[in-house]
Length: 238
Image 1 (cartoon, one colour):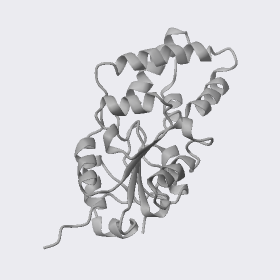
Image 2 (spheres, rainbow, N blue to C red; image 1 turned 45 degrees about the vertical axis):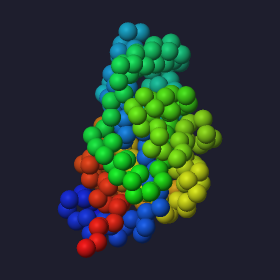
Image 3 (cartoon, rainbow, N blue to C red; image 1 turned 90 degrees about the vertical axis):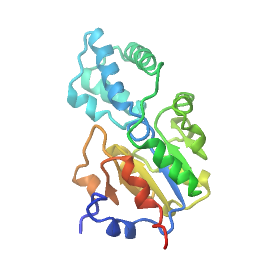
């Protein structure tokens, strides 16, 4: 049987693959809770083009879900040592923050699923490659920060995604074993991080569909967060 299925196809099969009970849920942020990955792509492409270094779509997608330290290396390897790395990031960060000034866009189904999990008493955390204070500010501006008992950012770990450290630290801060928690991710690097940490991992793709490698790691691939609570919460009795 494949390690990944759509929830609407066979929810009973998927339920047996999750911890019983689910003692915590850990969410990625960008691309999973917040609909920011496309804006990242747009503002990076705009900043690079203005400097005379146009991005390809392939390069942009290769950077999805990867922390900035690794992305910096990727950019230098791709463009060469003459690429104005610091100016590029300064310009793209300004464009990105300006784009989020009015409102932080959220992925479909975010607030309903967080509210349901909170009402069921399930602890929740965020594990993100975004640095502070940006991560907490974005969650707060989106009205989501109070749902989470812990927020693990790039500043909290020595080895970011795809290493399992962010998810292991999130479990530790929640006071649960990683095998008793569920992770929710959109990116390939995030899936590897969570699955290697030992968490049952649910992928909800944003910009990148799962490859066979991710399908071998995840418990499920869902079309949206709208489908998540039904998989995690027990069926009502009676």
